[in-house]
Length: 512
Ligand code: CA
Image 1 (cartoon, rainbow, N blue to C red):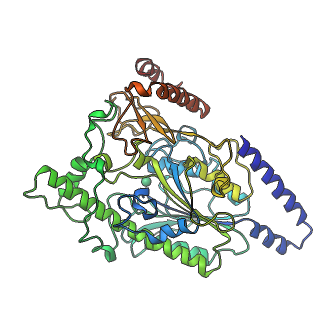
Image 2: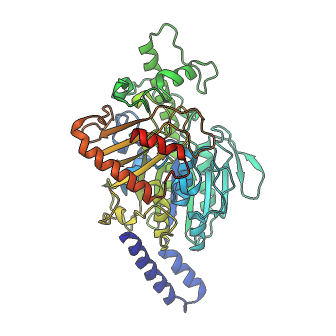
Image 3: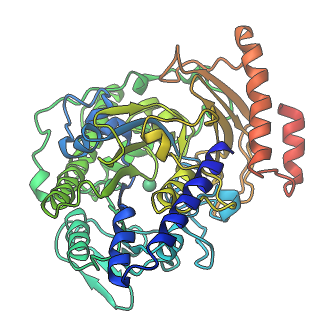
């Protein structure tokens, strides 16, 4: 609450300052107002795991460098605990725009649409004097609302020669690799923008969503490199609850069988004569190499965007954010894909540069969620967080001034219930508690088949890779009790009550 009050104070200050310039000639007043509000360049990739950004220092950091993305962190802040509230493309994008959880904005699964009549941050920034644009992947099914300009891929879009649809225009095919095209279009818009107003540009890459195509120029990248395996590629799943252990998209299962097919996107994997272990190793190598080649195009294009800001002298007046709609498993737990509340899928990379406020090379481990983006953008625009947004601005955190009442845990819920079952849970800095409730609820497009229920508890201090579920361990009884209480409290506070699902009461009665 304290942060909200601070926002209002800041807001009043801005309003008062605004009143003082009323008497100035209007063009000067406009220019002065514009200079007090920074531009916001929000660069978002698709399924870009923090583990595949070298400044995050994972096992991949030595073999796959991302110098241009790392530069944002070196000149600004790297946040290490930014989490997605529902780790799947469409819902995360809706949360970023609305500042609301899925059960509030109505976008639970890939099958849901974002209602264009709903409030969203672009619309609010527009009313704060910003020129707004979104270019690239949109994926929210309805046309973007609140954007003066948009040029989007239909659905997932294509990697090569993408078809795009611009506001008030027919579809058009753009020659080239999608990440290069999306950057070209972003730069074109920036060059022709109205320079008397601050801008809010969302540049959304299609990279690095499956199936992983790459630009021709990256075809030989990593050819003779052995990509390090994660220890959990060979995880013994017997520690897992019945709620998770028999489900999931794996390297040894679906990814191997996809890659053996003749029509696999980057050519088939030849496995003749290999035993099972060799097949898994080969699948992992090909999966990672395709994926990292796909990432290489993002890194180059982030460099182009940064260079443009430098050339145009926009570096100090622009907040640059780099993130991804959620994380991705790169063979950890033998998994591909996302959706689960496990670390690699839950964590979003988050780098932010704003030289006027953020000290270069700083690191922050506060718990941030994707619902915090919209309130933060509004804070930069001098606007308070609307009462219907559930996130909080992290502007103060990025200046090294974390509000004393900042959240100590975050609530997560994945609804889609397919081969990756629905679940909810809570993560603190130290622990994670997950409840797989085994039912398809509230979700269009969810499979109707129930799965097994189960609980999992992880001690992330001693077990950062989540290889030891300690839910039934007596030493954790007290922690478990406290986390269950906090989970219920957080769930109620966010209005995710389950009252409309009577079958849930029975599940909870049996398993809580
Ligand atoms: Ca995604």
